[in-house]
Length: 177
Image 1 (cartoon, rainbow, N blue to C red):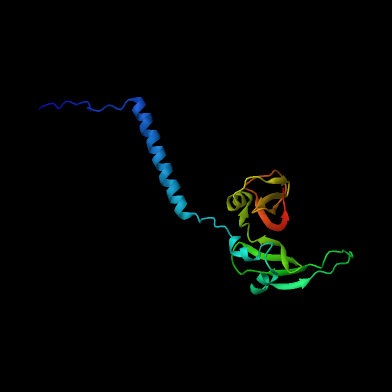
Image 2 (cartoon, one colour):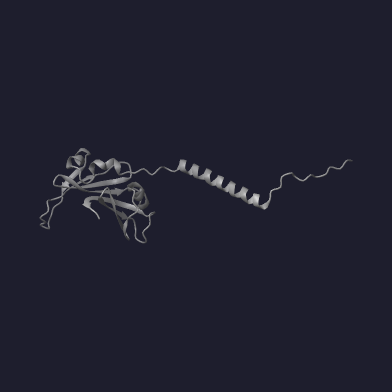
């Protein structure tokens, strides 16, 4: 009986090459995983722009055309300011459960969006409006957008974070500096 000898392979994987191969495989798995996650995760679309026609500075008629229900607030403080009209709208779907517009002298002065189901985080606002400059309070963040004052009311208390959920966003036509 003839004896068969074992041959050593022509290619030897040194410890350095082995480490590089593991790192390469790890990066490949990471890239494939992130690509798959990107296709599964819904894109965060900016929900405010579809209401641009009723932002502060627009005429009262814009809110009326959208079917808002309007009423006047009683002013028991005898303020010399004109009475403000409030108009409400409750969208059936989307990021907002309700939208409140404040009107005085025929012009929209303020708009407030009440969020539905934790739809927006502080970091989303930073992306939507291109700002990271927030003046922070424990339960609110003030920011500027298009030269207007914006305020985000944050869910819960505690330390400010871009990952905190927002329950209301309000814009006014008050200049902010």
